[in-house]
Length: 450
Image 1 (tube, rainbow, N blue to C red):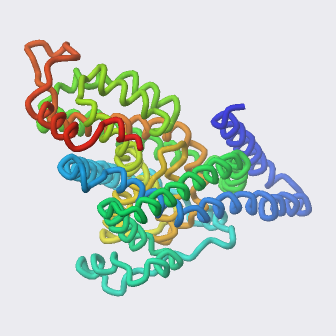
Image 2 (image 1 turned 90 degrees about the horizontal axis):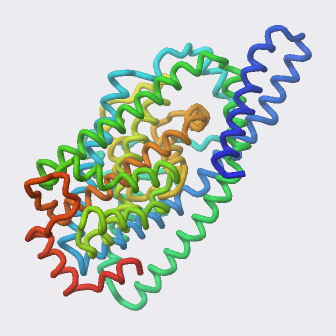
Image 3 (image 1 turned 180 degrees about the vertical axis):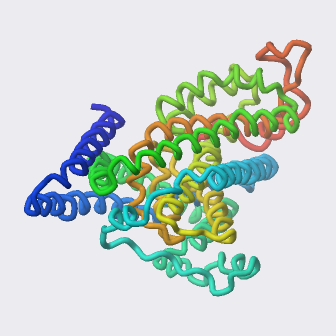
């Protein structure tokens, strides 16, 4: 049975049993109600918490390894100009994506409306890690200063993920620029750590049907149908934000920044969109995305391979938007009032964490769990999201892949438009030719996968 099918089965079984328990519980005798409560407290809650704790266990090493390797993929020393354009595009477009998510979730408020009594009943799990301490100085300057950890190991142990991300970023830059034999060996070791963590992620996701089913059973057994209405609103807000970003922001950037026709672009990337939607994995879609960029959009080979390879690891616009919406949605559900400064911190972490999010199905879940703990939102609320995460994962992966290809068009200098925008090919413009010559003179494009 495919992994997504097993997760859907777990969701269906857990949700059905949870709703059944919620409906039947008032009609049971006190002794029978005690048995149901014991099943929730002693079986379902521990299984769900075990799944969450497995995710927490992987957060720190996965975030460090993924951020370092994502920055090293840029090879800033040899491809400084191209890497700078890629980094600038990633930061700006990810910021726009998270802003769209935060505005839509604040305006539409999909998580508002659950009675506090029901929420209190849903939050009974033990052993949730304590949130990271807020900076003593809440001013903008104080927050910026607090982003730099005085001890990265202490920051990781205390849940200061912003400090850990900052250290990982500058460490990755230094490792990429160093170029010594020892540094190259260290980079290979970190790549080995990342590979091992990917195996662990797959093992944890193999337990996901049981963990997700247990979380949903616990929540629905206590909340019943009342919880399904805000979840439906949440799905609508996420899909709305992703649609606005993909068809609105990307189209405007292509037209007015890259000088390319959005119609030409979206017509050329259809195959990559279908692959991304069906696999829910930026990494699995990478070969198709490179084929589309080189054969359909006629982008320079060195540009497309560099940007798409790096982008599959660090240019996760859809994931950044999804993470921001999810954190604020769960904050609304649990009536945790986040200030403007806290929401700005959430936005900053989502942008930075986009570099460290694994390009695999459900790869953003550990990051979301980390952010929830950081801002004081009960992370067991992930059970509300996990039931619909498969569909949303397919949607945000499509946005991620389309954003990577749009970044390749931007870095290549756009497409020289002819009289007929229906033409998928065309001659390379001067900027593309110059980038091709620069790339071929500095590095063999075949080494971009090394």
